[in-house]
Image (tube, rainbow, N blue to C red):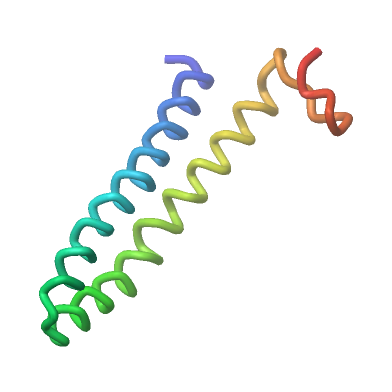
Length: 87
């Protein structure tokens, strides 16, 4: 595999983890909220505090870093002037 393929893979994987994890947590959060049990809601809040820095921040950084890296190595894109991304 080429470097471009690896960067694309990392970018897409980061996006899948970021969006998929957020969607799954929104479903769990909705279920916790409708339960009405304060302990369930508190457990969910602790889960968010645990998962956020360990899952969402690395996934967000992966999407950003791999995306910028792909742009920098690409001959199709140019970041030298604002508004002139396409040659």
